[in-house]
Every structure is written in structure tokens, then in C-alpha cells.
Length: 180
Length: 354
Ligand SMILES: [Zn+2]
Ligand SMILES: [Zn+2]
Image (cartoon, rainbow over all chains, first blue to last red):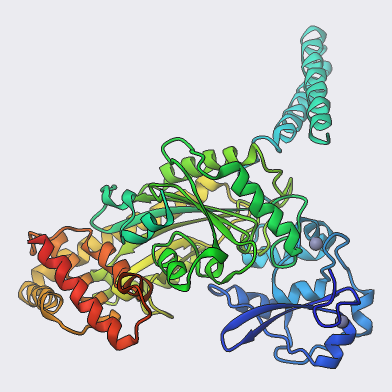
């Protein structure tokens, strides 16, 4: 993604600008950001999220952002280029990979926003989660297998072991199919 | 089905059916946020990536059907006039945010207007399903089936631990926002609703007015929705929402009975005066119209007004919004012109009832 101003350097900074109620995304390089003195403003939010995040991160509002030394050292998403401070500023992730990149810093945010929760307990997508369902089943079978072996019920254990093998083959097939 | 069709009727076909608790609950909605795994979210993505997503939806879903939701119309936002955009927003078929987007933003709308998909809004995909009355469970199972149908062709951004990955941290996990639109005139009149709000918030639910700005609920229409999307299964989120809605229904019914018993004549006076204002005004502002429509609808629900249909509230609340009025006039209008046209449309609609 190239800078909107100079069209030369890569855009490493993203701003949301609100002028007379019109919102524009500004994607520029650090050099131009310094020159043009971009102000940081926030996207309009439906309800209390903005306050929530602001309170959480102690944002400094309304300042001219001086992109400098600390930005380069910072965690940056390898896929979309978003840095953690940009995430804090806009309150939005840039891509799915951001969730992994910033993972270590996310639990306090999720806890705050989702009443203490940090892990998904809902739907697993049917197709994509296909092998995930199977993986969960394998964990259950393995525990069962352990118990059967402990109790020396080898005949039954062999049945379970075959089931595990079958599921594992199934997963391999699925995952090979996904990556084609 | 064409864009023109969506534009002409203020009331969506599904709204004509009466759902459970239709005297208080106008509609139930499920919205699911989804993203493509391999494309950055719209806030940061390159225009050409978003354009590919727009194309993908056009190629795969234009004029397709999902069960009773037939013949999806594909509409690119950039092809719409400002007035057309406002009409789709006023009908809740698209969000104000999508309407403001240029570039690759688009929508798919089923011919019964019960299902719409917003493309390249804050997330790549936002699925919306409406049901009349209180039917959250039904809406959820339909939304999840529809989600499976889309997933047949889309590789979703999904993580074992965090669930469905969304641009905003407030949507991650289920990506689901369930909401119920309620007409609560008696709770508003007695100011009980304000006292109940903190308790409802405590349960991870949000109450807000759907028309108008800030805390004011135009037409006494409130939307109750879940705020938490992570760490709770969809079914449990719905259960909690449903139980709060049931309690609100009960309180609203009790408050209506109490007002009727304690000050029946004052209530009757208020309702008939509102009907009079709507029947005879030559100029009416949206706030006054909303207040009168809410009173008239209450009168219908209480059996005080007999020959006017219940849909009058939903229909005229939409029909008298700025976008719709200007669509009707086929030109942009000043606010005074709108107030005049609003009064005339309401008079016409009420005469049509008699
Ligand atoms: Zn530049
Ligand atoms: Zn990223």
C-alpha cells in the first residue's frame, strides 16, 4: 500500500480523519505525516465501546501524532502492517492475523469488553471447523482409550484406537483438500 | 425484484405478518459478522482486494435463493443516489456506515427483505435476518443455516480460541448481535424504562432508541441487544436476551393496565388527540409525528382505536423519514417542505384506513 500523499513510500500510518462530519481514511508514510501534521481523530462509534477502549488504553486525544522512534520497535502485524499503537488508536484490528500478533496483549481488552471472557464458546464453522470438530472428538477418544488400557480392556481399546486412526485419516484428507 | 421495488414500499413484506407478542415486539433481528481469512479487513485492505470480494458476491449470489428467501438482488452502494441510500437505511436493510462507504461496498437483499448481506462494511460480510414479533430462536437457527450456506464458498477468518475474527474487538467470538425492537409507550410514560436500564446493562445487554439521537427514543421504540459476543454460545446469548425481553413485555403490559385503570380518561384523551393531530395537521415535524404515532398505536393495542391497522406505526415511522419523503417527492426537500409532505402522507394513509 503506497502513501496517499507522496505515492512513493509505503503507507505505514493510518488515520481516520473527520472533517465536517465526513470520515476519510488517510494512509500515509511517516515523512508525509510529519510534514502535513495529521491530527488523530476517532471513528464514530455506536455506543460505549469508544469510551471503554479509551479508558483502557489512556489514549492521548487530539494531539498531532509524532511518528517516531517507538513505532519501529513496536509489535507490527506481518500481514497487514498494523502496529499495536495504531490498534489502540483506532480500536479496530486490521486483519485476522492481528489477533495472533497482538495475542499476548489482548486478554485484558477482551475481559473488559466481554465481561471477563477471553475464549470463544459458540459456533464452530461447519466446513472450516470440520477437522476441529474431529480433533475435539479425538481428544475425547484418547481419554477413553487411556482408561480402557488402565482397566486392561484391550479388546474395547482396539476398537477405540481404530476409531482414532479413522478420524486422523479423515483430518489429513480434509486438510489436504483445504490447501489445494 | 429490483431496487425500485425496495424503494416503493415503506414496510417490508415480512413485517405484514404478525409474530408472537406483536402488540409490543415489532421485530427480532440476528446479525452475524464474518470475514475472509486471507484478506485484510475493510478498514485497512487495498481497494482491489475489496473489489474482488464485491465481485465474488455478485458472481456467486446475485439472483440466487436460499430456502424461502428468493432472488437476492445485488446492489453496489456507489450506484445509488443519496436518497436511495437513505431509504435503504431507513428500512434497516443496510447500516448508515455502509451507506457512507464508497468503493467496493455492496449489499444483497432477498425479495421478501427478510435477509440482507452487507459487503465490505466494517467487516467483509454482515448477515442480517429479521423476523416479525419475538422470534429470536427461529431467527438464530435461520441465520446459522444461512451462515453455513455462505461458508460453503467462503474461507472464514476463524480461530479456535477467539472464534470468528472481526475488525472490532467488540464483535469477536460469535460475531453475533441479536436485537429486539420493542414499542414501550407505558414504560416510557411512567419513566420506568430509565430505572430499568442500569439493571439491563448489568446483564450485558444494551437498550437504546432506534430512531432519533442520543438517549431519546423517537416513537417510544427501543432496541435491546447483546453486548457480549465472546465466551458465550449463541443459544445462551439469545436465552438471556429473550428472558429480559419477556420481563419488559410483562412490565409494559402491567404499566398499560395500571394507566388505563388509574387515568383511563386522560389516556383516552391523549390517544384521540394524537389521532386528531395526525388526521388534520398540515405541517408536522418528525418528533411530533413519532409521538402521535406511538400514542395511536397504543390506542389500537388497547382496543381504544378500532379501525386502524397496527402496522401504521412501523409503516409511518419509516415513510415519514427524510429519505423516504424525498424519494416520494422525487427531489430534495427543505425541512419545511418535508414537514408539509409528512403531514399530507399521514393524512392520506389514515383516510385510506377508513
Ligand atoms: Zn508519503
Ligand atoms: Zn493484521
